[in-house]
Length: 376
View 1 (cartoon, rainbow, N blue to C red):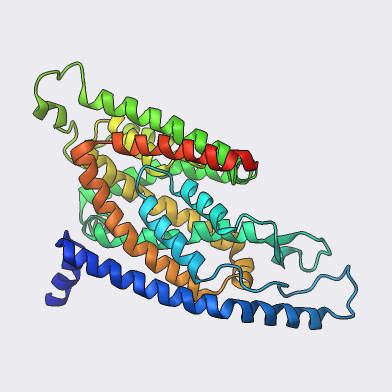
View 2: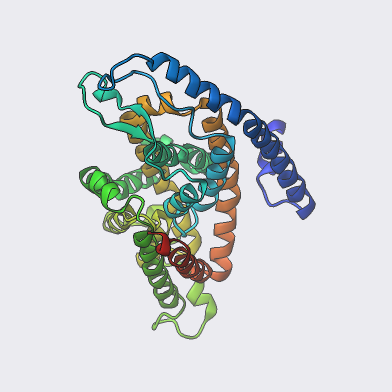
């Protein structure tokens, strides 16, 4: 019990000096690892290329090799950076996918550099390869594991009630579990049907991301204005802030399905799963904090499914192209970053609503177009 209380206090609001100490220690750790990686990078890359050249010397050019011809592409700097961006942006309504794709661009990971032959084609004689861009995009999905665990930690009591409900010991928990599952189904069906097509058309299209950021911002401003200026409650601020639904399990199955269809809009990179589900929660009558909480819980199953699917489809190729230690460190960084981001979002929604995030999205969309459009 004592250990549990100490662990819990680590993630509760803390004095400013403690937060500063935490971030200074974190920066020191990441800097040390990054410098170590940078010092060894040239030696590792040179050795890998030399070994690859010796192994392939004298072989015919049309024979497919079973090993990668390049060194591991994502180092500690890349994985830590992506972990921070993932943890901070996954649950904020500003599009984690959009930020991660932009980060990949800035890190030079959006490259068609070949890494390894695709596992299902090693014996087929085809020439398709697993590229650096594909590896980085797959890692972006897998690194969500850290953000997923953050929700498990922060909402463990709610999840425990859901588990009790599944075995018939907590009726309200059982209904909440069914509501979340129902909200998950539309994105699961539509995502499986159109995911590959969407990745091909919009996966790394920064213009499409900028457009999604802008359209989403307009939807947020409209929804926020609608929430705080309801025609039937024009006078009392307390009435404006009073939730129509007091608890998540008071949602109807139709309302849960509405949020689920709203989540499908997040298949457009840059739209933000968190944004569309929070807006969906607003429209069915949830207060900001409750809408965010439902978004977190829904994200738990949605992100878990997406990560598991990516491991299933790309796991073998990733194991040959990415080093394990940087990948795990990125997930750990995402875990701690997500914890702080979740608490920040709930506090910000209660005080200011969605408007600050909407204006941030508009600013980011302009920056993307100014910086990247001339290069395309």
